Amino acid sequence: MIRFIFADLRRLWAGSLVIVLLIGLATALGIAVGIQERALRLGSARAADRFDLVVGAAGAETQLVLSSVFLQAAPLTLLPGDVLRRLAEDPRVEWAAPVGFGDSFNGLPIVGTTAEFLTDKGRRPLAEGENFRAPTDAVIGALVDLAQGDTVKPIHGLPGEAGHTHDELAYTVVGRLAPTGTPWDRAILVPIETVWSIHGLGGAEDHDHDHAEGAHDHDHDHSHDHDHDHDHDGEQDHAAADHLGPPWREGVPGVPAIIVKPKSIANAYQLRQEYRTDTTLGVFPAEVLTRLYATLGDARLVLTAIAIGTQALVGAAVVLVSVVHLAQRRRQIGALRALGAPRAAIFGVVWVELLLLIGLGVLLGIGLGFVGAKVAAAFFTRGSGIVLPVSVEGADLAFAGLLMLVAAVIALVPAWLAYRQPAAAALRA
Image 1 (cartoon, rainbow, N blue to C red):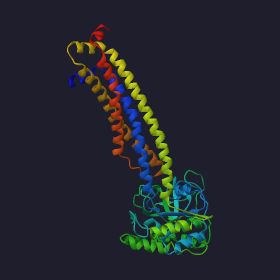
Image 2 (image 1 turned 30 degrees about the vertical axis):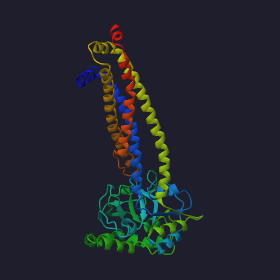
Image 3 (image 1 turned 135 degrees about the vertical axis):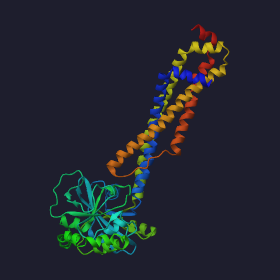
Image 4 (image 1 turned 180 degrees about the horizontal axis):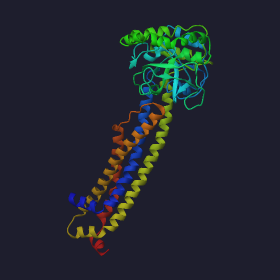
């Protein structure tokens, strides 16, 4: 029987190929939706892992998280500088790092922050180079196409916006962050004091301007010391944090957001509640992402319903094609019956043929769905910087198995029609 089935499929290869492609494309849609939605959840959750608590001005939680954690360009209401001072001096806080936006370079965001944020106060060593030691130092993300010693001339305005170049200063790349799989891999990090200074904000201006005037001399005079310090990342990070970080002086200007590292989980909940007021907003990024996931789940249900509807249409098409196919093979089936082939054998041939075609289509769909999800993830990563972990898991295979089960039931229809076909009537047709 197996030889007969393969010979029959070779003879009718064009129609068989159409059935396989139809089923493969319909299956690919459902598989790709599941893989991509799961990858988006995992990728965004990993991107937010490092951000325990974010404090900003009262307003939209989602936009605060998207701007501060995922570096999505959008103007945020400034938080009063005294909030930053209070957090930095709070005994429940390990460190509090402001993040400041407003400049870019070659389409990459320039983010002002502190030395201790870059390395989590020495817990995350840099991939190469050193941390901030001068106001014009810059540490680049893992995927930024620059090298140590390169010059960065900031352009006023967020990425994609036209603006003037800040000719009064240039940053020098001194280090590179380890890969994180987040938008921060494509960011240029600079001391927040310098960002305040070049934008004429607060009392930091004069202090930072004095440092900025001698920044390049500092880089050249201490180049040998930098090479030596590269072997002492932990000590260097603490020194850098002392030099360009808390305790904050008087006259701290407003900041878009503050990344807070609480000392304990209990402290995190206390701080979050304390800073949810009429003027400030404390959020856990994970909570905001959970609400976004609920929205994603709704969209996934819609897309899954579309995929299932597509599968139903394909199933109906397969049945229709099979019935037409049987009508064309009535003489062949009648001849087999006349030669003594039992009804069960005819039923088995038709059912196995269809199940084999459907199985090939489902396997093709799994492969196409995985490739499609990979391509979509690559485009998403290029646009957002978030690395999406694309993989085929048990849930995807279970979905494919369910399709096969339904297909096996659908294939019974043409097989039953072939089973009931009388031999004499088939030969007379």
